[in-house]
Structures are given as C-alpha cells and as structure tokens.
Length: 457
Image: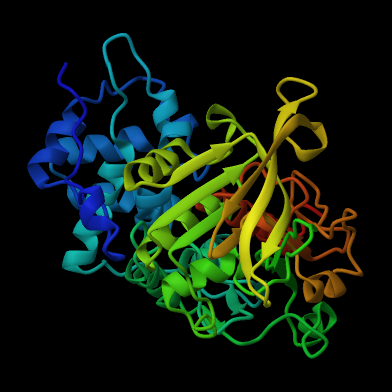
C-alpha cells in the first residue's frame, strides 16, 4: 500500500514572513491517489470519529470514482463548515485516529481530501441549496460562531425563520477573530457563511445580548425559541504581580492584531515575546508573534511537551518555525522596566504532586529553581470564560460558579423552557473545536425543532 499523500507547504522560512496560508490544496491526481488508499471499511471507523457526522467513507469513494459534486453534497449535508474543518479540524485526534489498519501504515489524509472538495466547489461556485417550505415559527440565535451558524443553517433548511444576533461587527466568531489566517483565511469562512445567508437567514451584527436586548425581549419580539452560542470573551488572568504592565496582552488581543481587526492597533509586538500557556491558542499566539515582527517567541507552560493540551500538529508547526518551549515552569511575577512597561517574567520550575493531573492546583515548586526571562512583551493565553455582560444576561438561567451555562445533555435546553445553549459557553463541552461546535449547533437545531413541534417538552 502506497504512503500517505500530502499537499505542498510553504517552508518555515517562507511562512514566518507573513500570513499567507501554509498548506496548499491537493491536486486532482493527488486526491485520487489518496482516495484510492482507502479500504472502504464496511463499518467505517473514521465515520465514528467525526463529531459533525460526516459520512467520510462515502465522500472518499466519490473522489475515487471522480464524482466530485457527489462528494461535495455529502459534506454539505453534514457540515456547512466543511471547508473550515478541512483546514483546522484536529483530524489526527478524531477521524484519522480511528483510521488504523494492519494494511494501512498511515491513516488516510481525510482533512486534505475534504479540503480538496470544498476548494473545488469554491473555484466553480457552489450549487444552490433549497430549504423546506417555510414554517410559521421564528428562532433567535445569539452568537455567530460555528455553533450558532451551524444551528442557523439546520433550522433554515427545516423551514424556520432564523435571525442571528452578533455582538461584534464581524460574523464568524473565533473562526474570523482568533484562528490565524495562515491556517484559515477569512475568505473561506465568509464563503461558507454566504451559503447560510442564501437560505434566508437574517444577520444582525453589532447587536449584543445586553440590557437593551435581553432574552425576555427576544420572546416578546415573537421568537419562539432561542439558541445561545456566544463565545468566551473574557480572558482568564494569571493574578500575579505586574499583570497590568504595558506590553502584557491577552492571546485574543494578539490574535486580533494578527488578523488586523479594528481596535487592535494598540497591540505592539517587540523583538522578544513570551507566551504563557500550553494550549493551541497559546501556540497560535506564539507563531503569530513571529509573523508580527518578533525575533524570538518563547512559550512557557506548566505542562511537559507530552502533557500540553495543544494539538500535536500546532506544536510541530511552532517547533519548525522556531518557537522555543520552556515547560514545567510557573510564572511568579512580571518584571517592570522602571517605567510602566514589562521587562521580563520571573518563574519557578514545577513538578506534579499527583501524576497525570496537569492543573495548577497539582503543581509544586522545585526548590532553588527560580529563573528570570527578559522580554519585550508577555502574551497570557491560559483560557477564556464568559464575559461579564453575558453572565448578567444568564441570571435567569442555571450556571456554574464561573458563569458557564448548564443544559440538559440530551436536548441542550437550559433551565428555561425554549432557551437552548451549545458550544464554548457550556459548563463542560466535549472539546473546544470548530467541528464540535458544529455538532452542538446541529444537535440544538433538531432539539429546537422537536420543542416547537411538541415532541421534547
């Protein structure tokens, strides 16, 4: 059996010069060769690894037999953001992790094949999709990230009148605000949002959920169900000395600057940048800092390399681009430069009290291991939670102590009838990825459909 086929990539030296997309699309010949490696398993394990429910075996078969539009149809029926997920989905931990065989030495390059189909569609123009006959029900979606938009797509196809309310001026949530362009160009997201818009979904940007637009207001306006899919807009602080110094930014501020978003002009990157955190957001911030002009980017985290929560592909990309990793280190305080700016990070090496629990509460300092790291900027990337405004509007709903919404796991309905929630705002999401958000949106849409038809009340 032949080896895995991969698309061309920019070299590390080329890609750190700007934000051009790193990976290219498979050629038709490459896609056919890679599709031909698939064993067409009877009970395809790869299908079970896709949260969005894509029939992977079937779309690969369509490629093998040159039925490109048939493959595209399979993708679009399951995941409206197939083009996005073909680029950023952690396939190595999901569908490709399930694609193991004694015959296949390497799993099928599922993500690249998915991207091949959606890029083909983008080049030729998407075929028109037809929604069901209009129903006399209105549904409000709060948040235009992948969960909210996936729900809007499903509900519109079912015939509902759907309005999406978005706090910012830009649609797409983290897809357009936080995922770097060298991994996911905004044009890909915008094209797939256009597919949803063509179904008649109405978008209201610059319309946050606040005292001027409450959940009660939505019901008073005639919406019979509400799906809350707001993102996590409040970065978690480290709560250490010096965190308010100039030159200390959140990961979201840095990534917004990398995207060139309005309001990010004040984020200035120096030559030596330290990023605090071990997740993929931290890794993306470090690689983005290099592209913004940093000559050195060091990622500092509690976890050892094999303990980091970041996706392995993101870590490998950062290694190859020259990001330095300083692991098993806890920041103690930020040092100032004699004025109001940051000049360095003081930290201490740590070990774990209990093996296998990679959380700050389980860390113990190693005696005599204090260290000082000079820098021009610090990027804090230890996670985000619901912002204060969202928490205020959630007061009529059950939440946990940190403001995450609690829902019925079967229906995704909150403690208030007719109000559903999904995605990052949940108290314990399975994972914070685009594909899992899409799965939440689809799940919520069908629960809302059942609710409005009286089958899950």
